[in-house]
Amino acid sequence: MTQNRRAPRLRAATVIRTERLTPHLIRVVLGGEGLTGFGAGTFTDEYVKLQFPQPGVVYPEPLDAEVIRRDMPRDQWPHSRTYTVRSWDPESRELAIDFVHHGDKGIAGPWAARAKPGDVLHFFGPGGAYAPDPSADWYLYAGDESALPAIAASVAKIPAGGLAHVFVEVDGPADELKFDGAGDLRVSWLHRGDRPVGEALVEAVRGLEFPDGRVDVFVHGEANFVKDLRRHLRVERAIPREQLSISGYWRRGMNEDGWQSGKGEWNAAVEAEEAAALT
Image 1 (cartoon, helix red, strand yellow):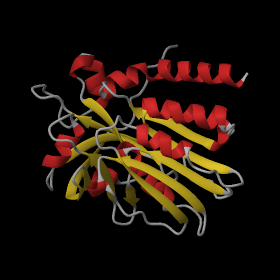
Image 2: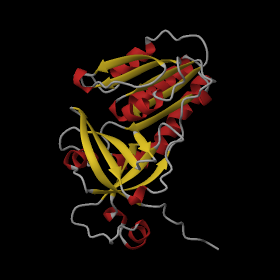
Image 3: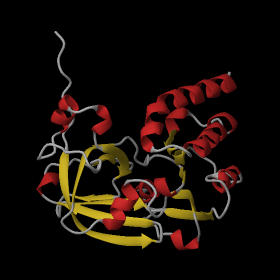
Image 4: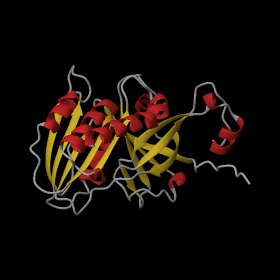
């Protein structure tokens, strides 16, 4: 007998406060009864799927994912955007999410810029898969602004004294943040300027003299530079796959809807190229 697939739980949280961390990064702190039982904290790359209603579309009240998926055409479903859980405090029941903001471009960034206490945000999650391996000899992190929250959350969990080389590419000096953590953090901020996203990042990682020992790698961000670094690390450096957390969070020229619809095919092609290069 065929069973209807039950939609995942849709949570509602309320904006408590917002903070402009840098010219292009806004932190939104959420709270409320909808966060009761929220299960974040196991991984440092945990994410939620934020749901932004489309203008002019009437949705059921309260917002009900099952009703929407059952009764409404797909092109009227809320826009879904994936964001990292920057921090979760189960005692105060506060969830912090950092948003990259570049003016009126996109959906989530402009929403964060306008957000005020009392606003309601719906989301699914959390999901996640990565946390620093405490048995690693050293750590390598590389990413752009989209990976900054996960990188910051991860380096904070590195064991005391653990060596970590951290490469983050941002627009310019004003976009740098201070990382907290007990590890030996060697942080390199790369200023993009007019260069393509990820170009400076790839150069920096390629130029790193790798320390001895087993490395734990986290590389996330724009799909094209992630692909370049994946090839470098897997093929040229021969780092075993199980020591790598690598994924394209987004891709130039695509919104999340377009990227997610083609991400599986993209990943399959990258894996095929990688397998051919390793044989």
